[in-house]
Image 1: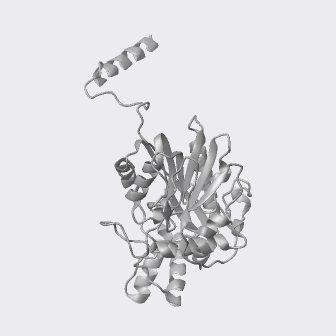
Image 2 (image 1 turned 90 degrees about the vertical axis):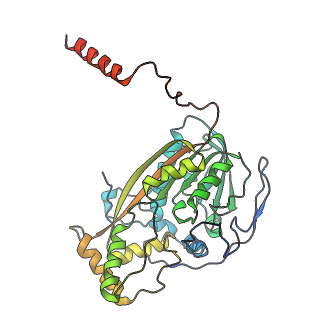
Image 3 (image 1 turned 180 degrees about the vertical axis):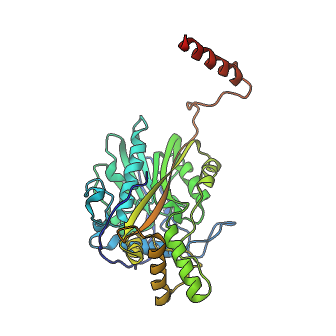
Amino acid sequence: MVPRLEMLRTGVVWHRWLRPRTARVRAENLGCREVASGVPPLGSKSLGVLNIFDRGLKRKQKNWAAQQPEPTRFDYLREEVRPRDSGEWRGPLGLQAQVGSQIADRVYDIARDFPLALDVGCGRGYLAQYLNKETVGKFFQTDIAENALKNSLETEIPTVSVLADEEFLPFQENTFDLVVSSLSLHWVNDLPRALEQIHYVLKPDGVFVGAMFGGDTLYELRCSLQLAETEREGGFSPHISPFTAVSDLGHLLGRAGFNTLTVDTDEIQVNYPGMFELMEDLQGMGESNCSWNRKALLHRDTMLAAAAVYREMYRNLDGSVPATYQIYHMIGWKYHDSQARPAERGSATVSFGELGKLNLMLQGKKSQ
């Protein structure tokens, strides 16, 4: 069942900031390595990698969002706010908190402690507040936005903040027992490399638990903008960033070296007063489009037409409009000899046909 949330109008947000400075990472069992925010110089990129997103712009968007005086006004899915049917609208930062709590639940399902953990793309630390010091001994939080790290939420776990990019983690091999990531990997240009970096810094038998937007996220907004721009301007450009398909995610995790994989999807639908409120909330979340081929300006008439199309095609009975967020949850383990492995091919002593006969025999005995 898809959860729904009614909401009212809140605030408006925009985005500005500066390029991060060099960061140095020190820890007792970590190496020390200088990186330009964990990011290569502007204009550089890995060979053979599609350069889809403007990572510099994404840093600015996230930095601006983290600087807002009341970011908690967006927390409409936190556990401590009103029930879903209360009629109060909260913004998309609450979506990050909600997904963070879901990732924490998956961590608690693993019956072990994690002396050293890493949060990749931590934002303001939405995930850390749902973990406790009995499960995680020390928590390293990395993000490309220094303002997010400076304004991180309080947690009982000892934390270290590191300015670093998801694709260029400044840590040594076999460092962390646990790596988590909540709603940040959908903005990296080289997702295979980012997953390989995560696998690299994990200890053997370490686990990665993550979540990212994907699939048909914001398809209502995408269709409305495309239809309106085509009708008013004779063509359209991409205004919603491309997302990874769930069918590709398992392959990418396996390619990065993870095993015992689990991938599942969750769909959250949020109702907004209109299209403009949705777009304002995406800015407040730091989730505005940063594709290189985005159109710099949309005409006023096109925007008004898109809002009308959105309302006409998707509106609810109460006049609100829905926005769909599709979230991929993933779990992967780094190989260790102690892990359970499948038996060798051909080593079975009973065939599936014989098992079927056994089932029929048991059913016959029960009927007697």
